Amino acid sequence: MIDALLQHFDAILGHALATAAQPVKMPAGTILFSRGSPCRQFLVLLEGVVRVQAFSAGGREIVLYRLHPGESCVMTTACLLGRLAYPAEGVAETAIRGAIVPDHAFERLLADSPAFRHFAFGTYAARLVELASRVQEVALERIDARLAHLLLELAPHAGDVIARTHQSLAADLGSAREVVSRQLKNFELHGWVALRRGRILVLDRRALENLSWTSR
Image (tube, rainbow, N blue to C red; front, side):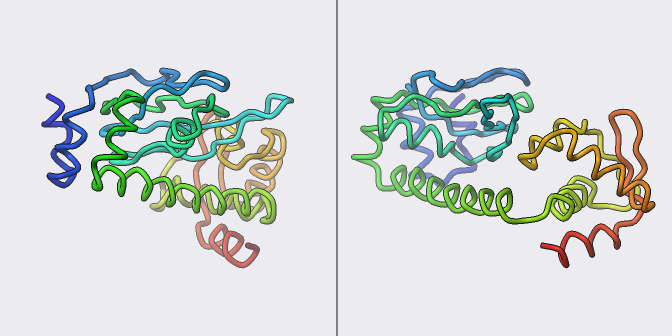
């Protein structure tokens, strides 16, 4: 079964993973790891989406990144290498399937498999660059421009409805729900969006595009 799941990897990497990994299947909402928990295995995601998030002392949530099929988690890699506890939380945003490599097998593959080593450190480096960009966005860019950009990403076509709460949008932006709600109400007053319970309809894509790119 694990061999079938790994078919979309190249043959050398797929074989290396198949010799050490076990298949795993989890429903949406499963907590894969939590802050302070020990790190004992390396997950390669094959189907579904995993959300990695952190919380402030006041309880504010921020989504650090999402894992998609074929990717691995930078938090997990860092914690395995440093033998550290997790500093964040990982949640199955959808039902997922993956390949689990125990910590001892992870160390062996790093030492013995160039293909696995390239995969682990390649995805690690790419995710670090993404996290650096994320920090820059949260620290330096305007919330209205970032919200406009996020709405356009979530509704790429005219007439698309965004079925997201204000709280979930705030988590993606690293902001407070009240701030996002205020910005959305302002967008609605300008006629750019229409707000419904649990839904947002984008009405004026051009206005959001102008705000997203000229104000960033």
